[in-house]
Length: 177
Image (cartoon, rainbow, N blue to C red):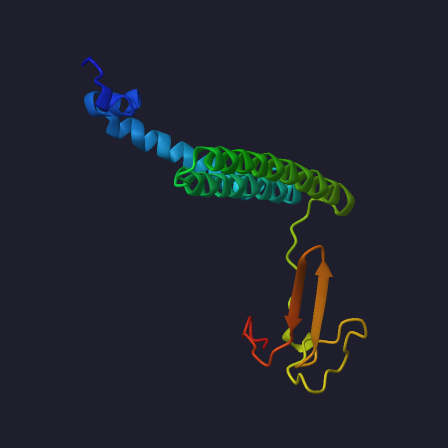
């Protein structure tokens, strides 16, 4: 085997193996195993669809936290003042820890929900007749949150205010406006 130079330190040994030992067959076998394993996991092969969904959401949450951390880290790298840069990196680490904790709490809540409602798939019937399309004359308006065009709500908390305006713009989803 060739001596690994500093330029080859990031090249995995498996890559060298595949170049030298007919790795095409090995690569195809590994790919097939991954496809079969992923398909079974996605299908909730054991009938635990709710738990499989909760696990997938947990993984997605973790990936999002990781992505956010590296974006924050990239921004911190460009801070020229060493003290500010260290503070920025420390904040990024703290947000990463908080994000991981939140992902864990959400996973527990989803698993609790699965225990409460069961493992069946959530795929409700969708009937366009159950939805209004005349937004000026709603047949069953929500008395607590009327979604009439022009309505506005403001939510204030801490130093933040969120304003929600009901617009006259719609989107067509499954033949429902």
